[in-house]
Amino acid sequence: MKIEILGTGCPKCKQTLANVEKAVKDLGVDAEIVKVEKIQDIMNYGVMITPALAINGEVKVAGKIPSPEQIAEWIKQVS
Image 1 (cartoon, rainbow, N blue to C red):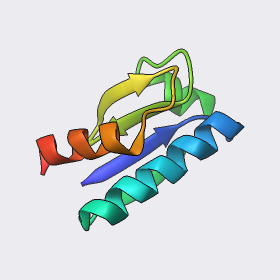
Image 2 (tube, rainbow, N blue to C red):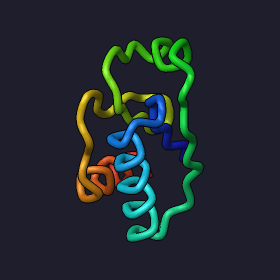
Image 3 (cartoon, rainbow, N blue to C red):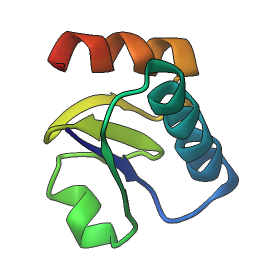
Image 4 (cartoon, rainbow, N blue to C red):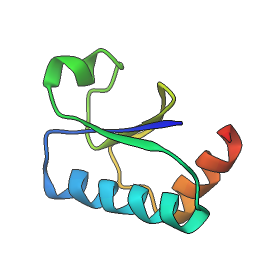
């Protein structure tokens, strides 16, 4: 599973990363967590507002910080 945090490194992006790491740890799943910081790469996902989160290439949320619980639900849906 590949989880991508789309954002330029702002505090909200960093909080999203922390929430992803918590959800992955709590579930005990094996996931590759990648930060996507280049604007062009972010725009290639169709995302215009950050932070955003994509799991296996599918954007799950953009423009807000998802909770660890919400991220865990998305992970369960794809694993």
